Image 1 (tube, protein in one colour):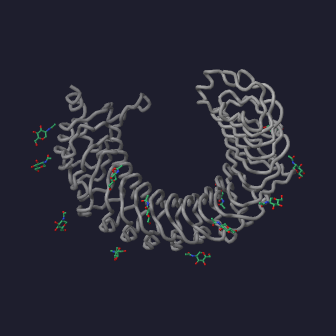
Image 2 (cartoon, rainbow, N blue to C red):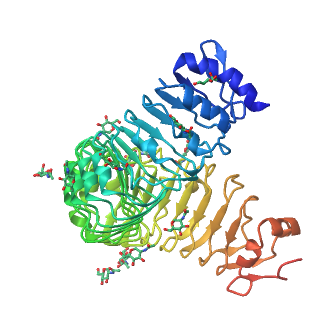
Image 3 (spheres, rainbow, N blue to C red):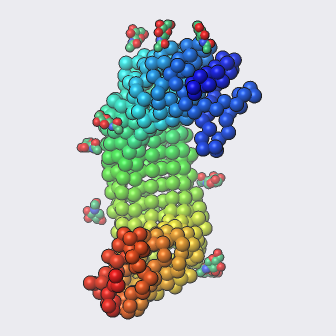
Amino acid sequence: MRSTRNEKMLLPVVMKLVIILIQRWSLGRMPPIAAHGMELLVTVLETSVVKRLVQNLTKLRDLHLDLIDMSSVSLTSFMNLSSSLMSLSLKSCRLQGRLPDNIFQLPNLRELNLFDNTELTGDFLLSNWSNPLRFLDLSKTAFSGELPKSIGNLKFLRQLVLNGCNFTGSVPASVGNLTQLTILDISNNHFRGEIPSSLSNLRELSRLDLSNNNLSGPIPVSLSFLKDLTLIDLRQNNFGGEIPDLFPNLTKLTDAYVSDNQLTGNFCEFQFGSSLQFLTLDNNRLYGCIPKSISNLVNISELDISSNNLSGIVNFEMFREFKKMSTLALSHNSLSVSINKNFNHTFPALSNLELASCNITNFPNFLNTSFLRLDLSDNRISGRIPKYKLGTGKYLMFLNLAYNFLSSIELLQWENLRFVDLRSNLLQGQLPIPPSLVDFFSISNNRLSGEIPLGICTENEMERREGLIIKDLGEEEVNAFKGGLRK
Ligand SMILES: *[C@@H]1O[C@H](CO)[C@@H](O)[C@H](O)[C@H]1NC(C)=O
Ligand SMILES: *[C@@H]1O[C@H](CO)[C@@H](O)[C@H](O)[C@H]1NC(C)=O
Ligand SMILES: *[C@@H]1O[C@H](CO)[C@@H](O)[C@H](O)[C@H]1NC(C)=O
Ligand SMILES: *[C@@H]1O[C@H](CO)[C@@H](O)[C@H](O)[C@H]1NC(C)=O
Ligand SMILES: *[C@@H]1O[C@H](CO)[C@@H](O)[C@H](O)[C@H]1NC(C)=O
Ligand SMILES: *[C@@H]1O[C@H](CO)[C@@H](O)[C@H](O)[C@H]1NC(C)=O
Ligand SMILES: *[C@@H]1O[C@H](CO)[C@@H](O)[C@H](O)[C@H]1NC(C)=O
Ligand SMILES: *[C@@H]1O[C@H](CO)[C@@H](O)[C@H](O)[C@H]1NC(C)=O
Ligand SMILES: *[C@@H]1O[C@H](CO)[C@@H](O)[C@H](O)[C@H]1NC(C)=O
Ligand SMILES: *[C@@H]1O[C@H](CO)[C@@H](O)[C@H](O)[C@H]1NC(C)=O
Ligand SMILES: *[C@@H]1O[C@H](CO)[C@@H](O)[C@H](O)[C@H]1NC(C)=O
Ligand SMILES: *[C@@H]1O[C@H](CO)[C@@H](O)[C@H](O)[C@H]1NC(C)=O
């Protein structure tokens, strides 16, 4: 029934238009595309329809069937696509099986987008890359195996996006022949080996994403020839050696993600590029001080250099000009962060401050913003934290002040607070009542005493919180609650 209706509605229109564009009407949000006054509403296509589309439309140039459920369509029906086809887009079509090789051999194909067909495989090892492809997106498909050297023949390619497939092997040096590339994204695969130095030929490149593979070796300094780079993502690989001085030469670079590698080098001599907005270097092996030149990052929004081996004294003044800062993470180094009592500068965009294990003595005064996460655990902060110091607290979700010397803290019923860790402080007196929606609340190893208020752990609550509250009041430890917990 459905396919008959589809054919009647679809084919006459398609024949006339040459370009068809059908969008799924998803959850009533997207209006159907109007095609010459006719509204097309197609959500499922079947093999017979596709066969006819493909066989009779000998002049078809663009075929876009994104979001249409084609799980029952046999992929062989795409064998006879018109040789005039220039653009084929089958995003999120639930295609299953093996893509016919000849699609890669269509002589005029410029754009092939197969994004998000997780059961679609294919093999372009044997294909003859004769077509003038500009745009190839195979992300979130089950394409696998090694990239063939012949990929270097696709010399018109501007965007190569292979994110989240199952590719293995090394990145062929011939990728360096794709000199028109503006986007190269091979993230979330199993590539290994070194970055071929030929990548420095890709002078048009603006986005280079190699993240989450198993690449190793040094990061070639020659990447600094790629002057148009705006994003470089090398996260979650095995890169080692000294971190190269790439950044000052890449004057358009806004996003640099280099976390979770084995890079070393003296951070004191690190050269920043002032265009950076995102710089993550956490979980590497950098050592040395935080250089004063870091103050030049006037547009920085996220700076994460936690979990390295940095040392020295950091005067918080050096971040004064970070007007757009939303995340600052310096945790787990050997830094001593000094925050002057009179430092009253505010960071209007600050939402995440991670200064764990930073030898801090003063609770910061500048938190009067809409921050979400605050981690000041394992420092030397003492005394009382009055509620105004946590600002409005309205958006606060994560608060970790464990392993300090706090004697009291005022917690309000902030509605977004989910995680509160206050263990191993010197908190005295009554148990502070945790906000009602907290999922994790730990206050063990303090000097609390008195009764545990009834409301804190009714049976329903306990269940909802999976017993975390109970566990972490730390009855057996330094706290001295009377009468224990009521059941
Ligand atoms: C497709 O073409 C064949 C002949 O080549 C014809 O018999 C058939 O009716 C055509 N289908 C449509 C839907 O026009
Ligand atoms: C493709 O077209 C040829 C003739 O041009 C025909 O023999 C063949 O069966 C067609 N294949 C499919 C899958 O439709
Ligand atoms: C590739 O093209 C060459 C000629 O250019 C041809 O001899 C060869 O058979 C083709 N290979 C495949 C797998 O199509
Ligand atoms: C990826 O390929 C390996 C073999 O190379 C296979 O064992 C594995 O199941 C594949 N994973 C996915 C998600 O397809
Ligand atoms: C393509 O790249 C390979 C390896 O980098 C190189 O040997 C070859 O000369 C290049 N071909 C062209 C046409 O640039
Ligand atoms: C990554 O590569 C290294 C060798 O360079 C190898 O020892 C390791 O097992 C690989 N890891 C994964 C997850 O494939
Ligand atoms: C990087 O910039 C410096 C100074 O502007 C220059 O001496 C150097 O040659 C540049 N390096 C590259 C690879 O462009
Ligand atoms: C900072 O951002 C502003 C506005 O986006 C831009 O005009 C300026 O050039 C940037 N500064 C640097 C050093 O990149
Ligand atoms: C960290 O640096 C210290 C010296 O500052 C050195 O002794 C130690 O081995 C380094 N740790 C790592 C993991 O590199
Ligand atoms: C911030 O502190 C300086 C002195 O350190 C003072 O002159 C200034 O008025 C203070 N600003 C605010 C808003 O409190
Ligand atoms: C912590 O800071 C104090 C000064 O406030 C300093 O004397 C001490 O050496 C620092 N500790 C570490 C481990 O850096
Ligand atoms: C926090 O900000 C509010 C306005 O957003 C202001 O009224 C209040 O005085 C500020 N508190 C502190 C301690 O700066």
